[in-house]
Amino acid sequence: MLENEEIVDQVLIAIRKIIRAIDLHSRNLIKQHGLTVPQIIVLKEITRRESPTVGEIAKSVSLSQATITNILMRLEHRGFVTRTQHDNDKRRVVVRITDTGQKTIEQAPPL
Image (cartoon, rainbow, N blue to C red; front, side, top):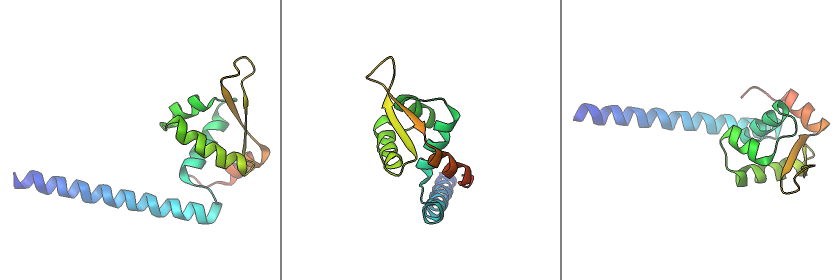
């Protein structure tokens, strides 16, 4: 039983180290490039697809639509993306990367 507890403790310590490393890397990205990891992931996903919807982005990056909407609001405010209604279904919103967004993502470091 003690052996199992030690293994669990080691796993939890390793997970904590990973979380800490991700946090430090994320802070570094914000300082150097002005973008968070989720923002970079979303921008990269938009460049992989042609005019994806908010739902498609959310599904492909495993985040909620509400979270994607907040990220897109920040990216749109900075001029990296545009959001417009879908041509055939006005209830759907499609996202397109701008030239500024494209240049930014080309200069972004690998995650």
